[in-house]
Length: 271
Image 1 (tube, rainbow, N blue to C red):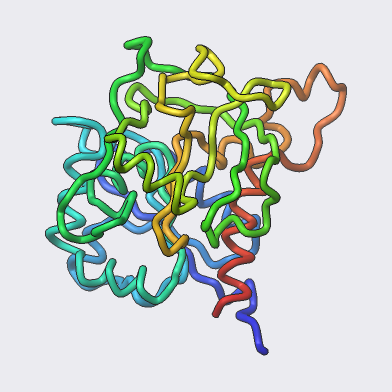
Image 2 (image 1 turned 45 degrees about the vertical axis):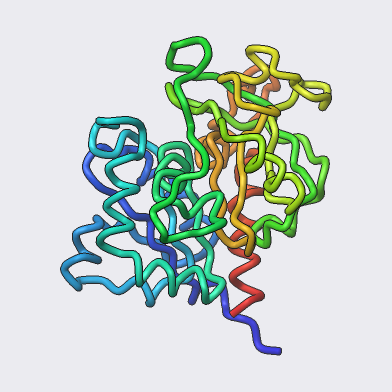
């Protein structure tokens, strides 16, 4: 079997007005050796770029369209009305889709996540205002769960990762039926945890927003669309970590790299 060479992998980091984490995300993917570029959504709409030319599609963090109405709502609905067919083909071809923070909110609002009936316009979950009613900006611990997520198949279940968050609307909520389906189908990918690796149990600040069952990230049933509230691109390099000075040295990479590298490895060995 001939695998796709890493330097031939193409990543599209999509942005619109209000996106502000695209450059950090770009830097991380470039460090992983892939051909990554930041593209405004208008380039796709006007035919200046084709989604089909990419292997990875990233919706980065920020405040798309000012988060008017609610976080991610406008961009999510614009995706469904303007790029539905291209996105459907991209997902059906098992290519990788990643939504980080506002990008996760966009995937929820578009229906790509949880993805039971993607591209129908139906929204099965919400990322609501934090229980604290405040913008939460802090480092949290994530526990990887055994899931169907192909993008994270290179991470062991039960790993404890330290990654920062920065959001005002990150409280994952859904109906009991949808929640049961997510669990039964193995679509819960990350849960907030305490520093010792035990469950956060909804306790603040370990669960920073009050998300049901401490859910921090989920994937679609196919396992190739992933959304999470924490920012792996902000925990990619060692110098981004909050305690590097107390250790007296800078480690090369942080835990965020493990997440992004797993996505690249998936693409590398799947195409």
